[in-house]
Length: 302
Image 1 (cartoon, one colour):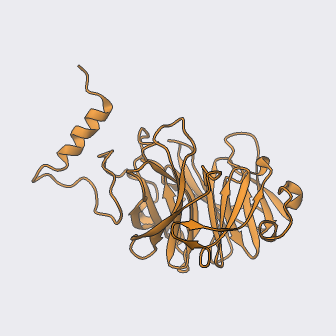
Image 2 (cartoon, rainbow, N blue to C red):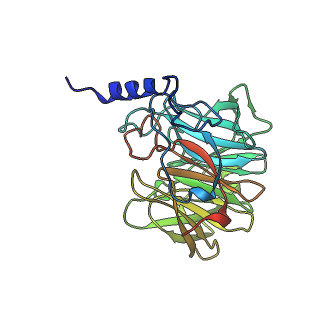
Image 3 (cartoon, rainbow, N blue to C red):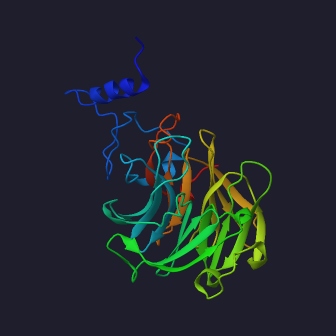
């Protein structure tokens, strides 16, 4: 009888424990997943990648999506799913130490945020993007005991997404993930989420908009005010692009690890990202790289 894929993986995982055999994986901070015994994949621009941590919650089926840097923490939003046909589920934000990847805690997101594609920190406020919705949370005053009380929430025209999210100078920058057709980046004042107005956010609220490439999964601003976006789709090649936020023009484009999702920027200028390639939901992909990882922009090669 032919061995099933699950049995084959289990057998291979067992071989990793045989005394005398070389360890197939580097020792990284975080909970190493046991459901898939593969070595980490070789990825483009590996020389630009610094610290690497296992994505939190992998064994429980969490799939990383949104990411941002808040003070000395990396925040990762993830939803639970183990099958390719389930694209949403119970979602949490995990708080990792920027320095060593230690898990400092987590909190649940509302049930309506089943696919939290983007996170962005502005001061003490965390903005969360989910298609058709934007949520604002006070990370310092309202998050305790595994829950956060909302500061504000707005419905969003689904034509605008938001599938990803970045924050800068009182503005939120977001758009919808597109595989074909035309994609657009919108700039909307943060006060539209935090203010008293309860109207659905529409393109008329945007103070600027620019065309975007397809397959955008994440966005962040660096210390120089440049906008970075990540692009990926399944096992296709992935990219990081640097944009001029005043025109939307692409300044540079670099190959990136497959499955790359959202981006964040630390105070030292390093970018941070997460990949969903190798999560339980996407363990059938050729790329196995379910990590939160640091990127040095000045070491990227086109």
